[in-house]
Length: 356
Image (cartoon, rainbow, N blue to C red; front, side):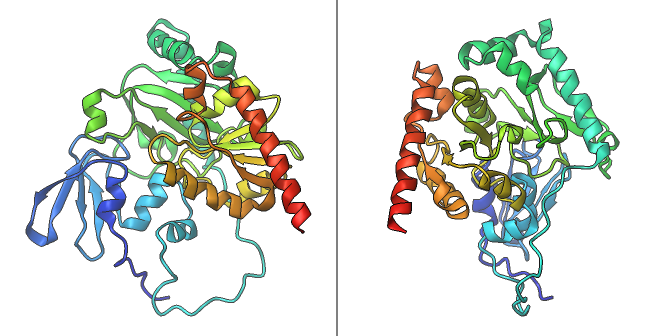
């Protein structure tokens, strides 16, 4: 197999889509520093975009590698999906492989050791949310975000009231640096059985200065897998809705769960795996409803991937506000919006069948 050609990938631009970097040196092609997209370490993340190959490294959590390593770790992609995300062709000099005799293997959940460590974090966070130390987080979720106590309980939402560091061995990770768990909302991602933990996300409260500095709002416990949030809600022959963030999924579940089964990718480029396509493919209708707040064109591009992969059963259905939770906060009728989307999807499918 030949070497993979990364010369067409702008690693600096790729990483700057997540965090803000600044140039600190010009020798050797230049060096850039900024907050780490993985652990949040301030000014501990280094990028050398003109080295061969371009590479990055965090002095705090030791995350490092090339562009492929970055998108795999940051966005939870498989190796082939990372190549597709970066628009990289097969390695230089490699001949085209014949069509595979069997479908690509499905993604699998993390190891049992990782799940045990993640379950301990999730359980402790769930208890903390309902204790005095979780009062501020609970007030934010039930007040500003307008999520009910029943919604939070059902989703296993919790909080980490203070920054913590846990030995990496607790998650089966082969590294010396401990796992950094920042203060914030703890959101577990379960598998189809509603018990297996695939991923744990922590949504951090950031100051305005941190936001302007590009500090990442969401971190994940390292070692998690490429999951689909709330996938346990999917049922054959029942409508589904694909969203991005977890709080939007919970909003739709709370307001219109009897109409549609909402799931979340976590980011517009995540969850593109055969396992999740098969689950969504069994739904009679799927509304693709990515956010429109940061970059509407980005949401539309991601939606085009899903509608192309799922075919006529998928319909793009944009939120009329920034996102479903923003609609709820503004007093909008989320249930009516979902129902309108299902009606539009029914008309779309009828026109497709008529054309055939």
